Amino acid sequence: MKTINDVEVLTTIHELVEPSRTAVLVIDMQNSGLKSLAYEEPGFERGGTDISNLAAVIPHIQRLLTAARSASLFVAYAQWIDRTKDGASLVNGPHLYCHRNDAEPNNVVEGSHEAQTIEELKPQPGDYVFNKSWSSTFHHTGLDDVLRGRDIRSVIIVGCLTGGCILKSAIDASHHNYYPVLVRDCVASYNQESHDLALKWLETKFPVFDSEEIDSVWNEMKSEREKPLTKA
Image (cartoon, rainbow, N blue to C red; front, side, top):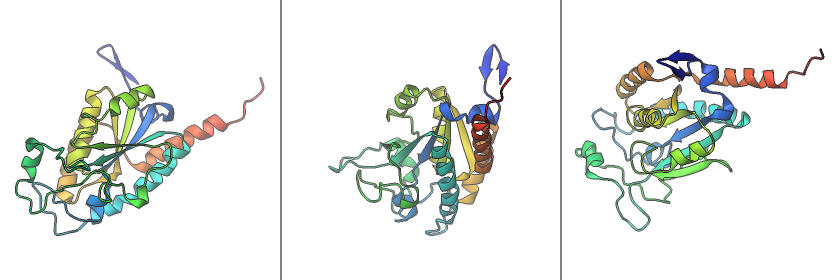
């Protein structure tokens, strides 16, 4: 920890991922993006229906979630929806502007198979699952209240897309007084150029680690807690 302009700032990985004050946020790892292939990444060539970049991070997220649950971290899932079950649109013009040239923009309906998190990463009992219709997971979702109620100070962010909901959620997390912790091998975009540009910018603003680094710290902390007390 450092003191900067009279403000205490968390700076080490041990401080930033301390289990009792940290949550994991899984963003938009849904059937709509990884199975139905209806989405195009605005501003970048997607290369047809290639989801290999997103599929590649699934096992890394699985391992991170296993480690997080073992360390008793709070886990939350954000799932994007475009319409209510009754068919009412939840997105606005400013959001849809970036999809103005898409042949088939996403149109995910609340409660549908497309809206659900993929089976490989499905939420477990006790996890918090919520819907969103904005790029930021904090905008009009109630997530901030949930995290504050648990005295969370850091949010480990995984999922997709790096240059979209990941980036905007990280920025908004910091605006809500949380440390956004990005996991390098657990975020992805359809387009590699988009991912690389976004991650490079994120690394200049926020803490970014590999999943193995975080897991190693949690294991180290667990070992320290389990050490037998020595008699004086």
